Image (tube, rainbow, N blue to C red; front, side, top):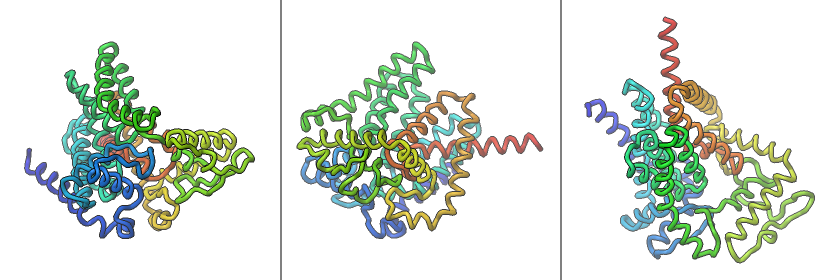
Length: 403
């Protein structure tokens, strides 16, 4: 490794580790509440698991346990110390950046462009802020990046099984990324034709080995099949007459659907939490089917929140984001140039870029199904950094051609 490479990675590591230490002092949301948003529930679940040895769903069954398990391991070693979790997030962020560098090497002949992509990922404001929050994306992002790198480079049998295990762990961290497994399998069959079938089977085997024990645990505990986590309540929370594109702090006690005033708590009442969650899903679908025009209007709000650099899901926090609205112009430029860079190179590397664009499409499906917000685009953000550099490189080549 050259001196410049050592210097680059040393600076990146220092930036991320220092930020993890000072995040509660400089992040305005963490200043008010060091366990902001979902972090409160992840912290509670991890500490209960670490100290009492039981998995308690303090936020309900919509939380997949992968990141909670990791936090519990940290708390078992360091005690109930969120700062230790933030340092873990910094290390996970470094894993993401290293993965971005390796992925970028697939696209650029000159190594300097890969360093540009990794540097952008290291300094991306949203990704830096994420490391201060105890959110599941901290584990999901490195898993996505390294699984994609594995899909692009794996050759041996055990490697395909390992990638399947990684995708399984990703699903156990963010259950809404379950569709990535069949998407990856189809991509392998498309790329390798008949030779892709056994590779896809090994991928599936690895994922099943990772996921199946937890599915068995949930079946035994709740006497129902649960696909890792449930999204019915969250779905209704994001799709109801009072929804605004994000998540309201509290749902109203009653909602009007198809001309009927419904007490949603009574309507979904059940002793089994799985049945209750499924009824919430039915209620959300009932509203969409009875008010398609209202849902389309809501979908526009979801998209607007997701296309804002500071699109916060909680409406009580959006004043801070509105003060930084000028940053949206830079964010739109970033997204546009990144999308252009990815699409313009699709013919040259259809497998690699097809997977990235498939991931981005899945992100948007989840946005329209659930809620919008800047956070929703985080899973694809490392690859958008690569897309931005691809776009800049193409602009550079066009300028040289004119000269």
